[in-house]
Amino acid sequence: MAKKNKKFIFVVGGVMSGVGKGITASSVGKLIQSRGFNVTAIKIDPYINVDAGTMNPTEHGEVFVLKDGDETDQDMGNYERFLGTTLTRTNYMTTGRVYQTVIERERNGEYKGKCVEVVPHIPLEIIDRIETAAEKADADVSVIEIGGTIGEYQNILFLEAARMMKTKYPEDVLFVLVSYVPMPSKVGEMKTKPTQYASRTLNGAGIQADIIVARSDIKLDEKRKEKISLSCSVKKENVISAPDVESVYHVPVNFEKDGLSDILLKELNLKSKTKDLTEWTKFANKITRAKKTLKIGVVGKYFSSGDFVLSDAYISVIEAVKHACYYNGCKPEIDWLDSSEYEKDPKKLKDLKNYAGIVVPGGFGSRGIEGKIKVAEFCRENKVPYFGLCYGMQIAVVEYARNVLKLEDAHTVEMKANAKNKIIDIMPEQKKKLENKDFGGSMRLGSYPAVIAKKTIAFKTYKETEVSERHRHRYEVNPEFVEKLEEAGLVFSGKSPNGELMEIMELPMSVHPFYLATQFHPEFQSAPLSPHPLFISFVKAAKKLSE
Ligand code: GLN
Image 1 (tube, rainbow, N blue to C red):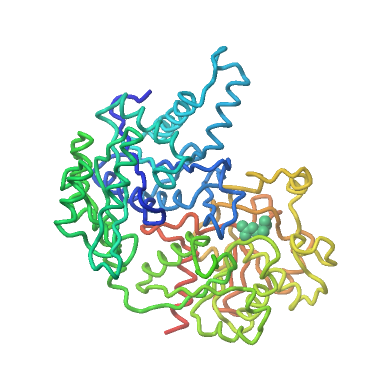
Image 2: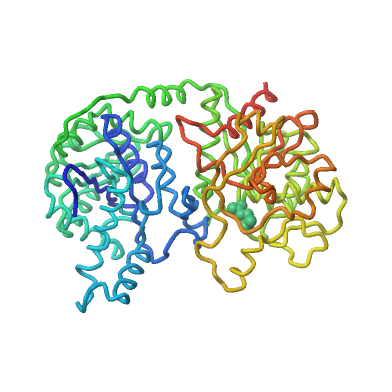
């Protein structure tokens, strides 16, 4: 169990989801980091899925890919961006993953004849995973976010694990409850009752919150703070007001205004080593100062949820665009463009000229693909800056083959298995996996190196001949067509070290101001304090053209 000096902060949610538990967990981590401690973050997702890879992005949001290839929840992206660290699969668990291990252990005879029970064996496995992650990351403090909201059946065992840890290490475990304080327009005041119920539900699991982060539209007044403090048995100064802010990156700065890092350290009995949030604060100020807006269009299909438009499926792309914009002294105004609209009404394509730049992010399946291909064609012909990511590269290559090389029936086999010209083909090792219905965690995943060709936009951008980027795909540019495409003017400026896999394609600057696409996902490695170079170049080109 826990080694000396290791601390654990559990972040749990009450009232409803989607109020910023992930950002709170990330910000709490950031603040502790700013006091000189090594921090790691762990995400617990209560669903049965072994990982997030098989889930529909419209419903579940983005699948965030770690360096080691694990397909995880989008919150892992928030942790990496806020903490500036690289996490591993040890930092992510689901109910499926926990049960899988316990069942495997039972089959291997590791429980030595014992009756293996839901309690305590499942919580013990959870604790073991948390401690292993802390150990591996050599973390002084681990922030553990329990997905969903308290009171849901599915996270009971995770709360039980947290309670057991607190019992065993009363000095080293802290609970932060992220709650929501609504202000119904007809009522005209903030209501704290939902938070009171949430706190009691947590008590029902044997856990007392140490800190309550109260999310709301506007700042919490003293009266509401007192009410929450009294009814939830939390010190008044530990009730933190978290009103809506201009950007999620302002949250740590705002928390600090309420003295949260002092509170956290006091509750954890830790002595501060330093106090330095300067770089982060500077970055947050940059956001506030950025005046010029840059219109960026993101062409995708995972947007609509009933009557609502959500952008969670592309969160890392959006954040990477933001990082690069702030870096370039502007702020993005992002529009979600549904690719199938361009299939229904190609006249709409001309509206793309209203954008400083277009991003076509990753995707799967057939819906909207012809629309995306049309977008790539329009951007190429009309010199609109184009940045394609994964699928966004595959469709750009298909477009080039169709319209420049004039290859009839050029397509990706993902869409048309019997296409005459299979420009994008299944990777050989992937073919078997699909035949065997081996879908989970089986794509080409995680970090792989790419060799960058000199005298290209990619090289000018990276200023390096070898880079490492994260992947998530089954298909690739068919090597049989590479020579023909190159002869026709397409530049493959990044390739796998053996030269077989096309990692980056671009058009020379003499032909187009910025037409570049990657087989990998650069968005997964962009952070506020270190924006991704390719996003910086894209935004720079877009900004220059719109001046
Ligand atoms: N569907 C494509 C593939 O599997 C692209 C994947 C993606 O965009 N992440 O290769």
